[in-house]
Length: 335
Figure 1: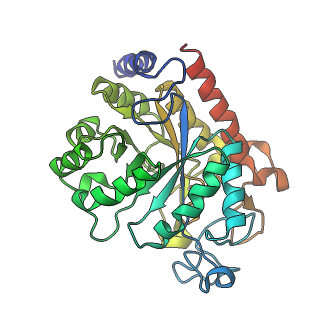
Figure 2 (figure 1 turned 30 degrees about the vertical axis):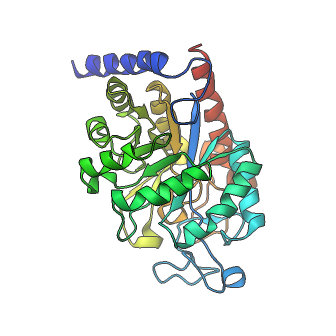
Figure 3 (figure 1 turned 90 degrees about the horizontal axis):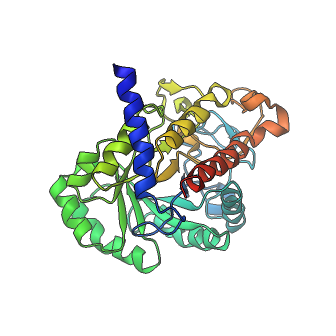
């Protein structure tokens, strides 16, 4: 009985996708297009050489450049997110694997991340990418406080905002904010479509790849579409934040099985948008950015999809290219 119900919901999600997603790949309400893939990006890293001090790499009493707050080590080395050459290379890489939108971590006006947003926007647009923001839970954030800065971002062409921890503010306050932002799509960080609807959001996303494994995406998306919401579930390769936070909870990458399983769940759910957690959240070990095989105490991508050595460094980028293509083939089959 449970299996039958799951199958019915999955079929309902696919059928709903045929109805809701524009069959010709044309823009969806507020921006984006059917078959959109978006990725979470973090512009918060800094180095002594480029920025005058280490930023984020030194978290949890680590001592860069050899000891960093990650269980993996970047193939491009410890870098500055304020280095134009690095950001340009990252945006070209993101675009090359079939991603269309980069969702930039944003910590409010005056933050380091907000200060670096123009650099990311310039590089992203040069690479053919759309830009969205990930509205983080910074001190003093309220729905009312976001009205003016989000309107300012919209004036710069940023029309999508993903709101992390949106459930921590009252639905009525989010609904009031959304009513003030015509032409923008705000996505609630929740798996509860009713919660997103009550807040007046355009859609929802899950973000957390440690909790979600893709098996619930069909149910979530079917329920979202019944309420007229955009479903943007999040896929990711795994989770491990031990060196950055001391948190022992982890979700193994299983040499790529975890990432594949989540992508399959998103495609089966006929997701309107697939969001990827993440390009470079090295602290939580969700990154798909290339990792180096530098040895202990760092992990490598060796073994992922049967690859080793230099070929394995880009394993998750290469796999992303495969999955974005497969996702769009599925969207095209609905035409």
